[in-house]
Picture (spheres, rainbow, N blue to C red):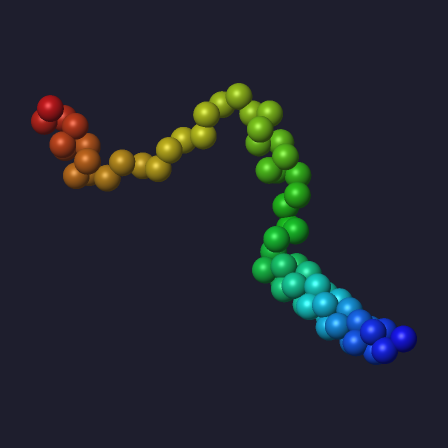
Length: 63
């Protein structure tokens, strides 16, 4: 019986932490777009890479 006096407050603290983490994730926009990442794997077109800077273009042209 005495273990319940310790487990109930611990479980309430953990519940509060889980709710706080969920609220934090919602406010940060983690759940804004749930469809696009799932559909990206079905896309056959390769994604464009980052643009090359002028300096790296010159070094490839000199070779």
